[in-house]
Length: 258
Image 1 (cartoon, rainbow, N blue to C red):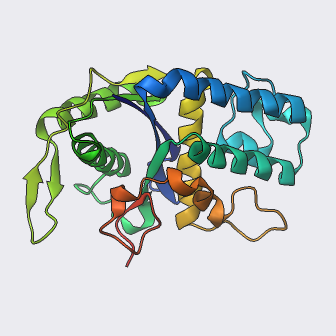
Image 2: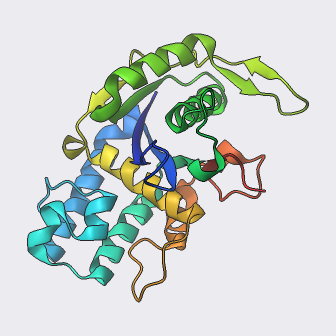
């Protein structure tokens, strides 16, 4: 069994962010206690080196703006870059898996009747859950979804629909296939991000994926450069987009890049 921790980056409106992204970190249930202890160990290292409280919420926005619990510390941009990179590298060191879905909002039409970015993102991530649960090993792999608490009712409804009526495009030809996510366990679990290290990791993954698709503006020190996604190394779940070589490993882009 796996836990799938998911958090979002960006917004779904016509204006605002360039994209809407979902980041996912997969943790095998039987390894969860050991993985948690090692993440906690990294947080203790950050406390010793930079004075960041172990229980402080560390999300992409705080590292970018030096905000939230980081503001009193006055950390330099180079330091915040190093912290972000450390989290990305930690995932591969712990032999975890991560992937992301990035919706290119400017390529979607916001006319009535067109796809909502959030709907498209969650439909896409549930499709990847179906493939992961059925192809991770010789037997189907149960999966429990844990997400940030902001969209609880929406995610619960989307998960129930995906469990019964999920569809996906065919590898060859046109049309779609019925591929329900039969191995989702229970309803999704909603967690406040400040109470979950793994939801915070999913947030960092989501923003790094966004910057892999949309390079940041030029500046002397990039806290999250385009290459930050590649710091995940072996943690990138390349199987999620193996049929789209134009996309970075582990990043599903909708609509796809040319």
